[in-house]
Length: 182
Image (cartoon, rainbow, N blue to C red; front, side, top):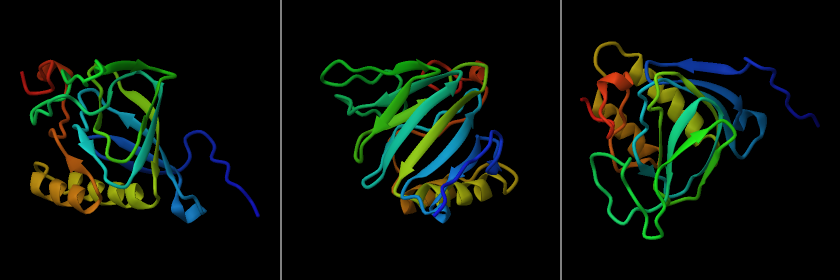
């Protein structure tokens, strides 16, 4: 039996206008969890969402990301950056070395509100759900023209991604503090 060693810069890479994902460890390697390196461009906001079955782990390697991993006292549909939990938890601006664990059912989000790309290690359980999700979303983002929000929603519905606030991407200078166009 052998393990797997993946050198820097290696792995299957999917690039879209929204983000860059490199597959590091997958179900094809025998793993029960999928592990990816993700470059998060300036202005990308995955939107607050939940998964009924999946667990996720995020580790910031470079840059800064705004992170959310709690149930807010009030879920608002437009933005998550001002959410607060009953215990007083608020969104955290995480730097390299920070991590976030998300159990199934927990609302969570990440956003790059800086003008520099951020890089993170992302692990999702069970595999290959997020592998398949990334494979299909790259097709939607690469179709040419504006991104079809109905196609994205249908994809997210199929892969246990229950969206609370919208997925957004664009330059931070064009976005207000809540992630909406300024």
